[in-house]
Structure formats: C-alpha cells, structure tokens
Amino acid sequence: MIFTIHELTFAVGSFELEGWAAFAARCVCGLLILLAGWLVRRWLMNHAFPKLQARRRKGPAVPILLRGFAAPLGRLALLTGLYLALVTLPWSVAVIPAFFLKLYRIGVIACLCHGMYSASDLTALLLKSFSPEIRGSATLQSVLVKIYKLMVLILGGLMIAQESGLPVSGLLTSAGLVGLTISLAAQDSASNLFSGMVILLERPFHIGDWIIVEDVEGKVEDINFRSTKIRALDNSLYILTNSKVCSSVINNCAERQKRLYRFTLGVTYDTTRPQMEKLMADLTDMLKGCPDLYEDSVIVRLTGFGASSIDLLVSAYARTAEVEEFLRIQNSLNLSLMDVMKKNGVDFAFPSTSVYVEKMPAK
Image (cartoon, rainbow, N blue to C red; front, side):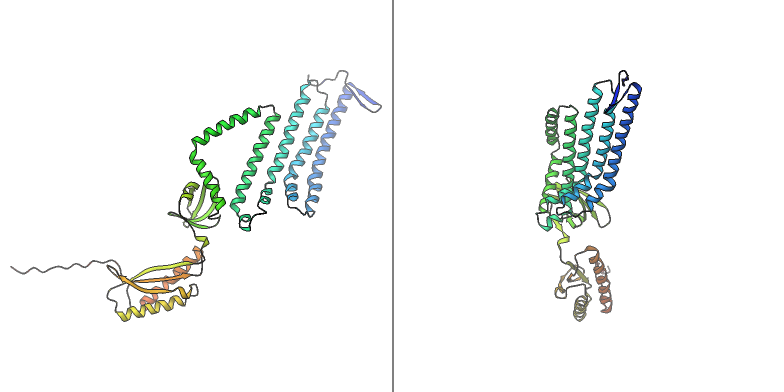
C-alpha cells in the first residue's frame, strides 16, 4: 500500500489522534492547504496584481514584468498549495515525497520561464538609447522579440533538463556537434540568416515600404531570418530569400518625394507644323494647369522622327509618391491628353507598312 495507517499519529499541541482518525485529519489538512493555495491565486489575480498595475511607475520595466508574471505567479501559488497538500499525506514509500519535490521544482522553473516569456516587451527597452528611426523599426522589434523568446525557451529547457537529472553538459556538446553538421549542410540558410541581419542593420527598407527588387515590385509585408515577403499590386505574394535581396539592386519607392509621369507620344506624319505647334502648346497648358503636377517640371518637346511616327516627349513630376494615387493621376492625365488630341485634329500613330506595286509594261 502507498499509505501507512499503522501507528500513525496526528498531534496539534496537546490534541493527538491515531490510526484512521489521524489519517483523516491529514487529509483534511491537505485539502485546507490546497484551498489556501487556490484562495491565494484568486487574491493575486483579482486584487494584488490589478492594484500594482494601476500604480504609476517611473520605470517602464516594472509594468511589463507585472503583466508578464500575473498569470504565472497565480499558477505558482496553486502549485505550491498542491505540493504542500500532497507532502502532508502519510506516504509509506520514501521516494514519493522526493519525487513530488522534483516535480514542484520543475513547475517553479516553468512558471518563471512563462513569466519571462510573456514579458517579451522588455526587448523594446534595449532600443531606448538608439535613434527614433531604429526605435520605430517594427522589423527590428519583431526580430528582437523572437530572439528573446527563443533564449528564454532554451534556458528554461536546460534548467528543466538539469533538474530532471539529465546530463546537460553532454547534451550541450552533442547539440554543438549537431549544429556544426547542420550549418555545414545548410550554407544557403546561413547565408540567408546573415543577409537578414544585414537588412535589419542597414535598413534599406521597412515593413510597409513599396520596393522594386529586380522584376519584383510590391509592398513589404514581412522580414524574417530567411526571407522577405513582398505583396505585389495584383495581390500576389512574392517570397524572396534574403541573400537574393542583398545581392540585388533595391529601389525603395517609399523614399520618393514625387513620381515621374513620362512617355513618348507618337503622332502621324500627315500632321502639319502649325498643328504640331498648337498641339504642343495645348499639352503644355493642360499639364501646367493640373494641380497634381509640379508646374515647373512640365516638358513637351519634339524629340525625333520614328519609323511610323513623329515623336513627342511628354514629362512632368506628380505631387505624390504613393503608387495608387499616382495611377489615379496618370489615368486622368491620359484621358485629358486624348481630348487635346481630338480637339487639335491630330491622330495617334501606330506601326504601319507601305507597299508599292510596280506596274509592268505590256508586252
């Protein structure tokens, strides 16, 4: 039997019980201790921590720790009550109390690690002394939180392994050898990891920026250790490895202060000089009168004679850097340009071929 009742005693001062009565008294004490642990947990969760969090603190670290440790310390109070209740019972097997103590110590480590894991906002304090640009980098904050949580999990796992009696030093040595083997076999992943760190440190772009990397154009949605995710204008998602991003030319459109509206307008060769001069003047007036363009940036010039058209350069800078707004402006300008062409009686040129048939003399 696990319990021993023979010659069992329970004494409180001069009051003493023996046998089954003593065993029942031990069980009642255990239940009372468990109830006390539950009451302490309720008090911590409903009264103590809310009042502590409501107080004003000079430093930002204390509120973060209070929020992180509120739930774990409540569980620790209940765990302590359960442990004390179990060791109060008369176990006949000597190793059972020691086994309960080991489980209790592992539970304490797990609760403390849970509290530190939940207090991951402490990583933001590491950037407090840096510039506002670095402090406001959502990408860098996300990476720091991931590193912090990973370290807490690793340290907690090592402490639990040591408490369980596992050879931690041997595990670390084996993990080092396995890590070396994996790193040699996964050089591409290591390259992507270091490239990701370079991106985070140099900050050529941030989450939410509109960038162009080779033939990929879109908004940056996420930057992690391995890849960068870009959402294109057609809503497709491109996942580029960080090594590819670092080795490519990056065009960060979010750094623009304005966008260029430029194209070559081709008109037919039957257009006369007066028509051309009037068309160029009307296009210039139309562009300069648009409030969405910089007036001093408007250029309308005859640049050359193509195979099937007389070429006009039309160029101006729009007062926006956002691609959606620029597309709206471009659409409005193109429609207005069609009206100007129709008003001046000038036609758009298109590639054409003239075929001449020679008439042979009659025999």
